[in-house]
Image (cartoon, rainbow, N blue to C red; front, side, top):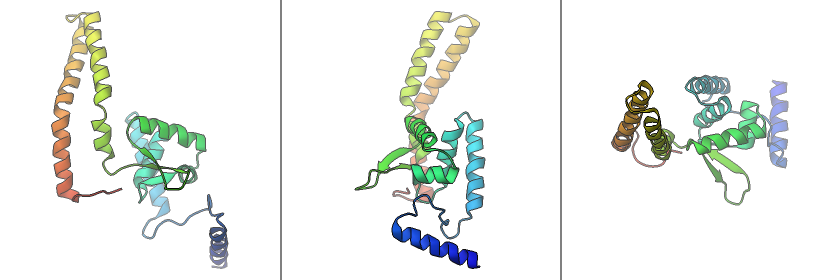
Length: 190
C-alpha cells in the first residue's frame, strides 16, 4: 500500500514536470495490461505464421489492440520493449503494405502510427498495383517457359487465379462495405 502511494506520488511529480515520457503508464480502466500483451504476442505469432515479418507483426498487433488505434514510436518501443530503429523499420514495412499510416499531431514533430478500422479493406484494395506486376511477370513466364510445358501450365493457372481475384475483388470489397455498415453503422472508427 505504501509502495503504491509512493509510486502514485512519483508519477504525479513526473507528470507535472513533463518527465512522464517513457515512464510506466497505467492501462485504461477495464483493460488488463497483461492480457493485452498476451493477445498482442499471440496475434503477432499468427501473422508471422502467415508470412509477415516478426517485428511488423508485433507492431501491427499492438496498434490494433490500442483503444485509439494509434501510438507513437516511444509508446510502441515501451510497450513492446524494442528499439526506435526496430519501430522505424517495422513501420516502414507496414506503411508499404498499406497496413498503417503515419500522422502528426498538430503543432508536434512527433509522428503517430495509426491502424484504421478498415485496414484489411485498405490492404486488399491497394494490392491492385502489386497484382498487376505479378500478372505481367507471370505472362512473361508463360511465354518464356512455353505455354504447353508443365511449368508454363502451372504459371498459366497461377495467372488465371490472379486475374480471377482481380475481377472479383471490387465486388467483394463493395459487398464488405455494405456488410460493415449493417454490422457497425456508418462513420469513422479510428
